[in-house]
Image (spheres, rainbow, N blue to C red):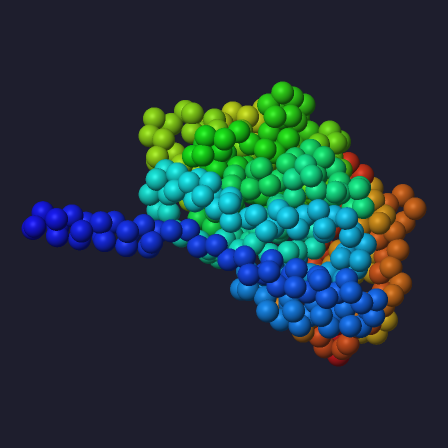
Length: 432
């Protein structure tokens, strides 16, 4: 009898622990979306449609949908436009959203494998919401936010009404089949340190999440970029090195576009994935390697450089590549009608010219506040122009008397080859 009671206690404790660690899913937004959809499609009154999507979907939003809408700038009018424009898509997607719970066990299984592989695992809630085609998955703090219009589609979903760029995504992937792996990828993001906003950081952040999600689940990556990168390593790395410090559009390398020279989207995932995989394979302690990758501090330039350099994926060290880039950057070599630092500048309307060491493209400019802030930033008049050869830029200011001014000429100026200007602070004071 005592043995039986002890066994019962153990079973209760076991069930309690399982319940405590059971993955939380929230899909109420999908129910609300279809309730709104059914009424919206019964009326042609646009004002009524806006009211319905607001009342029945947006106002009832889960915390996950609220954050997704805020982050991706979704709005009621956009939802209505897409509901009206893609009727076959929505009708064919609906059955998949109804069957969503049957995918929970596999997601649970993958998250459990991740938890086992990563000792500092922290639980997160997974939200399934209907977005507006700007994310298949993202995170906010301890929330995984799944854009179900992307991620619950499969080969039976009718996509021919959608824009070509979105169609190409569905043509290359089968999102519903890949749902559990996507959820694991996003879950890894909830454990990572915040990104630094540069191309290398973005690639590591995404590639590490993709590698770890694949490693712990035992599943190959569903991203076409990974297979392409492995088959074309030299070509991809060469283009990455060229773009590393001059890229002006991160969508060339990440997050769903194929505007890069190689015409393959998300190749930045491959760069980060390959670096992570090489680091993991060379590490004796695999658990420690996973922990190091997840907990990489992107603000620690030495730690980032060490990880990249150890992989030997790039032809030279990060330090060498950066030094070479700095040597190629243009500078400001002169300015007029007065010298920088002058304290005897006459107030009133003043036309200034800055001179560059090399020709600039004439469609990119940039000025900003200096360290003293907006109170020391002068009034710019509309007249601004480049010289025909791109070697100088002229602008007109309205200067007050007895005032110190600062103008930061930013790195938005750039050469035709893409190298950005070394920022230059103009600091001067007007007379009484």
